[in-house]
Image 1 (cartoon, helix red, strand yellow):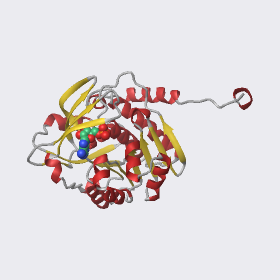
Image 2 (image 1 turned 180 degrees about the horizontal axis):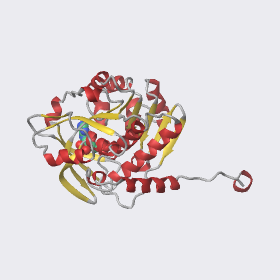
Image 3 (image 1 turned 120 degrees about the vertical axis):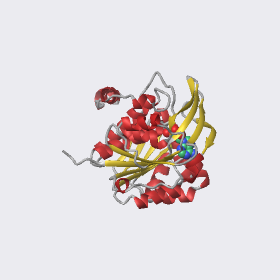
Image 4 (image 1 turned 45 degrees about the vertical axis):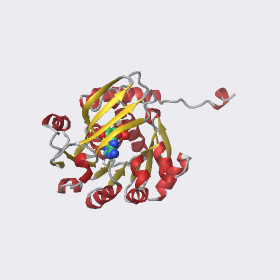
Length: 314
Ligand code: AMP
């Protein structure tokens, strides 16, 4: 058996209030590191590095620990937990931020413990780019590091974000973010520009339409799993990232073409579960049998038979 691997993730841990065309919730567990951790926990050992306030209770910690996520580095400080309020209209690919209260997150200085610094895989979730770069420097055990970000940092700290990207192996951003970060309308060219900064591969997330991978093996694209019930897209991107990196870490960081393609499919499957419920509720209650079943259905969906040149191309 391969030795057990560990994945450390740094990012936001939050309470979210969300309105979608299908319902609303006033306060639910959220945050980029939370969604990432839960998705990744199906594939490998996860350590979450984040900060919460004194309103973050045992019930919230229990959601993470029930999935085996190690919360030793979930720092607790006096004050309130980061709070985000968002709304989605019928185009669920676009989140409208209504309110952001940084609270204890404003002074967040990630302090990864020795065990997190030794983790083989590191994911720098959505926080200030300067902090992402500092965590990358500190986590010297990581032989595979990925990064995510958001419009806020692209607009306000572009240079710092480009510097942070230069320190990692993989970039995961959505298509609009990739375009605005590189100031390049064509995502193929934009992805190449990001690779030129240093990363070995770039994943461009495309919301419900899936995701594309640009790597040394070439191009690969995967659809989103077609769902009839979409309840709340909050955290879909982080669940994709959690499935993707969780799979890679759990499989000895195999970066072959086949392994990266499987990681993309796992990311897409985990994101599809995430949007079927509010906040973390669907992924937190997920079973391995449900994942296997959806993965098989997804695989079958993408199977295209070879063209018979003489018969089919007329
Ligand atoms: P996504 O995967 O892009 O849907 O990410 C959703 C999560 O991002 C939510 O659970 C929010 O708590 C979190 N979030 C929203 N705004 C910020 C921010 N400025 N910094 C860090 N996390 C945020």
